[in-house]
Image (cartoon, rainbow, N blue to C red; front, side, top):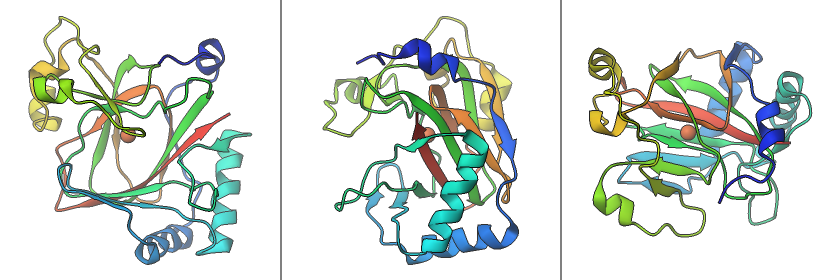
Length: 231
Ligand SMILES: [Fe+2]
């Protein structure tokens, strides 16, 4: 697939932005919400535990979160899946014990006007690395592994692709410092746009079309909240 409303999507894009929209107390409330929410996925292969932000566990916090995002983004809609009851999830908590592979969270519906990804670190340290290259197809994991590339994704799963590759060798020093969990040949032709150095208390707003991954810098585990939005 390829997004249909490409011009509109591109017209909404801009540089990654760090903002402070939550107080210390609110960050604590979000961390506490994470603790009481039920878990849905424990992906052993990626070593990540995911919990969706379900509404009504803390109604006051639901309201605060939605409205703070609105102040930062203007009009937006949630695009982070829905519960059985058809209610929007407000985001996805991801607790990871090893770094995530390179991917894009551009969504699964070609009609959607994808907008921003909102990342709120809750336990660090950690970094998210954004590459200059953008992707306007379906949500995809980028790999050079032949078995992975042959994998037929089920509904709601990322595509696999190596179409991100170019010819230029990736920066060896940068690889050594941040990306040792990724085969350097899987980074050919990529250039780094932005390193987001996680800071609890901060929130990052970034276009959903960016190819990105976490850095190899994890101290045991890290916990973040990500919300995908659309117009
Ligand atoms: Fe992501």
